[in-house]
Image (cartoon, rainbow, N blue to C red; front, side, top):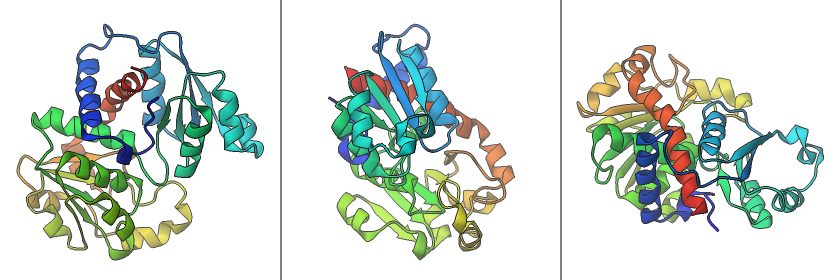
Length: 298
């Protein structure tokens, strides 16, 4: 049985198989195979979502399956039922689960006790589905492998998105640079565990120099709202703007996993100049997640 709980657990060949499948599903939308025929998958979302929810619901249906959206407040999880008990029940009724929540341990516990394919659709620790999509998008638009390239992440380098980028860099052999204030850089424990070519720096210009991809995310992630004022102050200079883009390679892509807060982590001008890339990136969540699901059940 296959899960996607973390990019750490995927091999490079696994990732390549998923990425190759994403291209197939995108090219053949409407006429491809339906490996989830007759199955019902649950989407259990503690955190709000637009792209993740829509892409998984549409994707599961296009693969032949049915979906049910379960907000914890609508089921007994919201009243304190242990995750392991909910997992044991759902595992006897449904065929797979997509979970978007806070604690990584909750997704792992659900997978262990439900004994059904389980997808980490975002936790505070990782966002593996997003980074698979981002790599697929980079290679689709650049028409070349990400191996050997330079990816620069700008902003809060200690959140779930850069954590997944760190594992991806290790698996697929590209250089990752994380430009962030010291307090917003990933832990040494994660960096040592993952290995790979990862540079953490406070020097934004040096991080962007010659980059093939400039990438950012919101400065205030869900669950960090009480820190908003301090985060906006600390990260105010870690922005993707015209001057920074000029430091990167002329063919560099600019990506944002959305939602974007214009004037904060990215300027209005740069977002609009690179809108086609950013919204292709959003669309590709559908195709990559269909490939992921097909890989999980094959």
